Image (tube, rainbow, N blue to C red; front, top):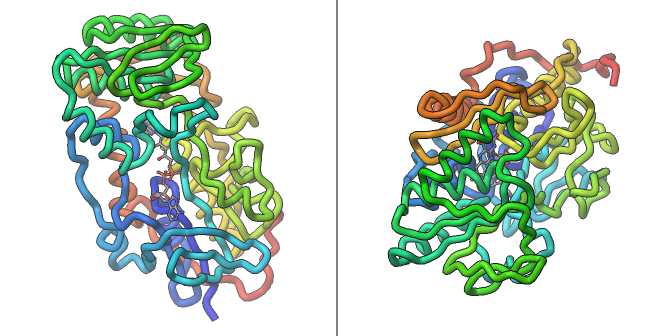
Length: 389
Ligand SMILES: Cc1cc2nc3c(=O)[nH]c(=O)nc-3n(C[C@H](O)[C@H](O)[C@H](O)COP(=O)(O)OP(=O)(O)OC[C@H]3O[C@@H](n4cnc5c(N)ncnc54)[C@H](O)[C@@H]3O)c2cc1C
C-alpha cells in the first residue's frame, strides 16, 4: 500500500509543499492529495488589488497540478482527527492519511471589537475582497473610506484605495505611529507617499467599535466613514485547535524547526497555520515570506524521514519587508533574519518593481509546482528510518 500524504490548503504554503513532495518522493510508493476549498489558487498578497478593481490572473488548481502526480481534491475541510488519522470533508466523507501537512492559512481577525463582523469590510479573503470591490465601486466622489490597522496589510490597502480612487476621502487609523517599526528612511518615504495620495492618518488611535457609518475610538471620538476596512490582524481557522494537536494561544499548530507538530509526529504545519520558530527562536510572522520556506522545510523533512536522507538544517530567516504603496511606489525595508529593520531601504519605483517581481515569483512557484526543485524522487525506505527527531 502506498504512503498517503494529504496536504490541506493550496495557498502559497500548501501548494509549494505538495509540489516539492512530488519531486522528492517516488510515485510508485507515495500518493499525494492536495485538498482545497476554492478551485482556484488565490493570490492573497494581491487581494487589495482585487478589491480596487484589478483582476489577478485566475489559475485553476487542477490545471496547475496536471501531470505532477499530485491529486487535487476540491472540498472544504471541516475537521481533522489526528488520533484516527482522518480528515473530514464537507459533503464528501473522510480521507485517511499517513502523513498530514496542515496549511489552511488564516482569515481576518475581528480582534473582539464590537461591530467589526457586522459592519466592516476585509481584504483577507477573496470573497471579502470582491464584496469590498463592489462597495467601493458604488461610492460617490467625496465619500469617506477608513482603513483600520497600521500594519503591512493596512498600509497596502489604504494606499491602493487612495491611488485607485483619488476622488474619495481616504483615512487610516493606526494604533501606533505610521510605520513606526520601519527605518527612518522608510518612514520618511511612507509619510511622503501618504501626503501625495491625500491619505489622512489617525495615529495612536485605538478603534473600540465599528458602526454602519464609521468607527468609534477608545477615547470616544467618531471617525465617520461610508466604508470601514478592517485589517487589524489575521486569525487561523479553528480546525487545529478543535483537535488534540498542541496549538499556541493563537490557535496555530506548534511545530519544531522541521515544521513537524510537537505533539503528533505524523502531522506537519506550514504557512500561517504554523507556530514555527524563526531565526532567533521567536515565532515566524504570518506572511507569504514565511509560508514558502516553511513549505520547503516540511517537504524536505518528510522526504528525509521517509527515505532515510538527511534532515534540512537551514533556519528560516527574513531579508526584507516589501510594502506596496499603490502600483508605482513601494518600500523594500531590509531586515535582519529575525525581522528587525536595518537602516537601509529601497523606495519608489525601483521598490515597486522589486515588490512586483516577488509577488510574481511567489505565484510562479505555485503555478509551476514541481519546477523549482531538481527531480530527486526517492523510494520510501521499507525499514523504519533511523533519522533523529
Ligand atoms: C491584502 C494582503 C496583502 C498581503 N501582502 C503580503 C506581502 O506583501 N508579503 C507577505 O509575505 N505576505 C503578505 N500577505 C500575507 C500572506 O498572503 C499570507 O501570509 C499567506 O497567504 C499565507 O499563506 P498560506 O499558504 O499559509 O495560507 P493561504 O494563502 O491563506 O492559503 C490557505 C488555503 O487554504 C484554503 N482553505 C482554508 N480553509 C479551508 C478549509 N476549511 N478547507 C479547505 N481549504 C481551506 C484556502 O482556500 C487557501 O487556498 C498579505 C495578505 C493580504 C490579505
